[in-house]
Length: 116
Image (cartoon, rainbow, N blue to C red; front, side, top):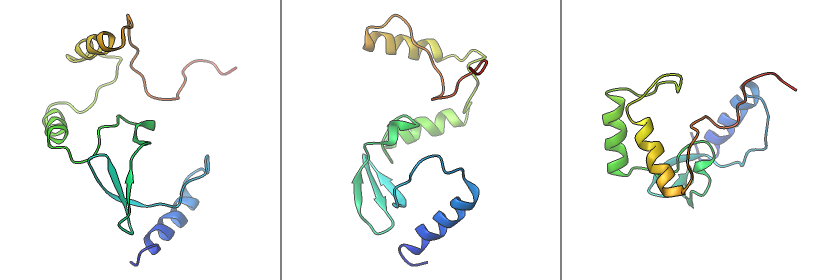
């Protein structure tokens, strides 16, 4: 598939399948390295938005990859309705770094409870 055709094909499929909740930029990223993303034409971009929905850990760093592989072989995810051996450790590190007394781990943007 030629450059641009893959993006157009993906855009058409997503138009049929996804809710149009916000405007998207017409860029198809196909690779990442360090703090850079690469689009289907080979252009590199400094990734300043990856932290919107996830942790901004960059791409392809051997230490991050090794940690993800090691943890995924044990336990990839549990709900915060249960205990995990590293939750308090992470909370301690975050409170020490931020100067705050407590942290709250949650996903982004969802809300539980009654609607107004």
